Image (cartoon, rainbow, N blue to C red; front, side, top):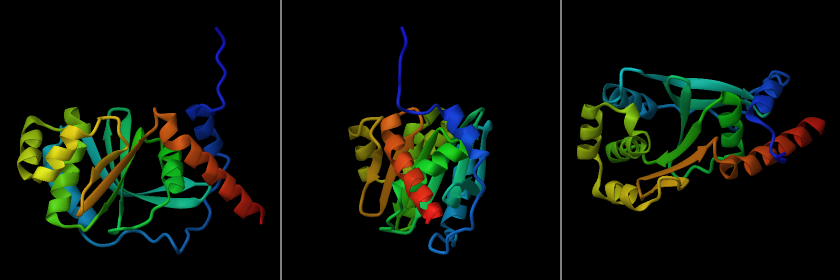
Length: 201
């Protein structure tokens, strides 16, 4: 049976990425400074399996310029990106879709928080609930002990496939997955159309 789809394959998109050079970084999209990403890395590393690599402050070349990814976790061939925003920051889902596809990530997590210890513990707990096999037994135990009651309740109520993982006063966490076209294809196409229009102008 022949199936037809309007969505391009991921391989085709990534091959097209080689044809697109990175443009100058937008001054409106400055890298996140401060110690919050460093605090996440220092607390996260001891909790993960030894096979999980952690990197941070990675720049991904996209048609919209270079976009920063604050944290990257990789286990085998699977990679996930964690992008941090200031509290109540209005980050574009278009940019996140570009980052996920051109960076070759299986999932991208967008986090808005007040950068408190409570927010840090809750986002790590939510990440552990989503990727339990990436954490050691010790890591799963520690994250559960440090998480707030609200985040534990939220994680038990929300469906595992829901894009919004946390929606609390101190931390908001949303996820888009490459395997779910509904999460990113529309935003990706809009981003490419916007970028093409800008370059044409």
